Image 1: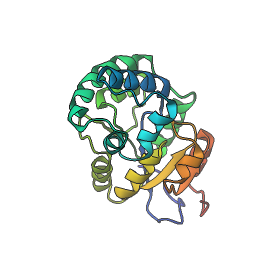
Image 2: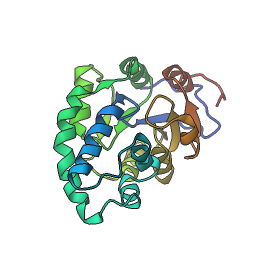
Image 3: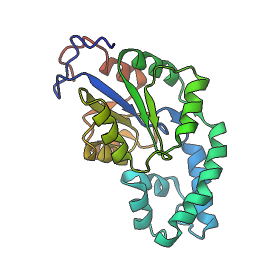
Image 4: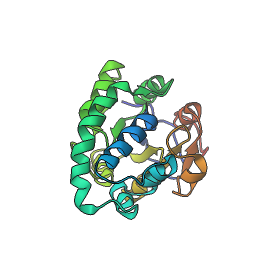
Length: 225
């Protein structure tokens, strides 16, 4: 189905399975999420996420763990989820893809199996795929399917067992969770965390631009890394 002949990385001789995060990789959502999430926390009496850096620090690892480390009361986590979910569902209508990202996805999904694994909801991402006619994306695994990104990546790896999974993420936490799940983390340079921060998560590749991402996964690319 896919033209893998000659595709070779130093990591593996298996063909690539491309797993994409949604927010910060496909969707340019930071400003909306920062505004709405900090507002939801403040309404629950937690006002420590009052700077961009405090918010970004939540994504250095697992979000729930980082929230608790930041002092958010464990007993209020479910209330936060209830407060935030409908707000961000409505806010998704204001979020646009990064310029060029739909064309990048269209190209990559024509030559490799592509799935989207996200903390967003599956139906939000599927609406995006339908709106942009991205019919070759194989599946979406969202928070309504499973809350753990690690478990979702592992499920995708089992489903495509003959492939080597690469997870495209934009935060340090993405890099760590991809490794835990047995995927090779690829850091994108246009998302929420900057490249220096992403490096601390141990990505196998850093792609500063979409052009670099396309070049990385071109068939017949030899043994370049």
